[in-house]
Image (cartoon, rainbow, N blue to C red; front, top):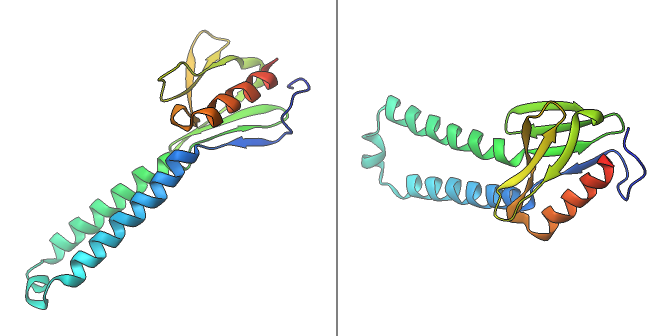
Length: 145
């Protein structure tokens, strides 16, 4: 169990920039596709086969699932464990398993050093968030002490 720190448990860290970009650019892509489709004349729309339309829908679903995977990334500190969600993968660590957390300058996300000598990415703390990410690393370090 983590020692007394400045963070009240449970606490969740999520990447702000990635969430904003995912929502903005995802919405923008959807709007551009819908407007493009609606501006086609009926004759052009009729030339698209069912397979071609299905392919476009499938590509849209792939783009959405990739963006959603990035947006759902998070790090959750609970009283007895640390939960790391990277994309569609969820890993749970006991507090004793996590030795340290690092966010080197220029790194895309924080990295957890584990007791077994390995490391694990923590995409919920994105380096692109700047000061917000550094604060999250400091808070997580205080929980590790």
